[in-house]
Length: 393
Image (cartoon, rainbow, N blue to C red):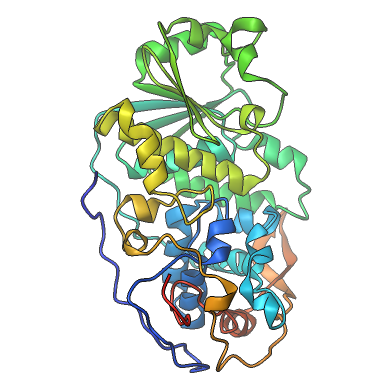
């Protein structure tokens, strides 16, 4: 296992607007919204930083677990809000809009997150597919010190996302800026490659591992990839002897000549972009465990990085950050002390000028302005993070 990669500053126990006095307990725990988030984001910590006006810290908290905050803040199904305990008092926190606000603010202000990378380990990984699963795998693998090349048959990265989602909902400018941030980490994106059997065979001899995140452009089953149908991946799988399969929920690992990991939408039933990000993260953790310790460590590494009772993994937990020292217990409604939290209905997002230009025109989008974001973040109970619960899990 890794030594701690970074140190977190000590947490403040006072909200910016002094709405309540926090009742501390010995050990932090998991917020229900974080357990319900497929990407495993530490949502109360994001709200805390926004409430304090610490927008760079909020952005770093987001991007430690998700490289696409602006994109997810527009098109994610935000299951986190369904789990929010604030609904008992009035309305769920607008987590979806907050992620979008922080992500857009970071793009506008050109924030550079200080997420540290491990030294290069000499291992090269080929990734098939430039959708959110493949690009997320490249992002997290780069943090672990791998060199990543991402291949796609489309003329531009995330082509399916840009083709399937209306511009009014996901502007190409936003998605491309977030992809460029992944490029700036050193990830090489190579489009226009036909993923033929010969091409796949060549990857096996040139790379130490292959990650397949082929998206939702076609319906495929795992049995087809094993040779019962005509697929472009058949050649890659033929080169391996005595494969062994490890099922991890949203990722399947095949061990043979080299490890091949299957994520994306065509096999594992990816439901949203957050699920796709989660599959990329699981692939990265699995590969790091494989090369660091061996195949026997894969399942354990995925389990120890799990967020509460959910299915998502956390990079912060795996890298022995602040969340690794927390209890895995999910905060229950009975743990919440609402003293000092007056009823305050959800702050509605406004139609504001986003600051992003598309075809030479300024775009009007429904999002928070800064005062609205501060007010909405102040409504958050801080479950698990500020740990003002009545009892310890």
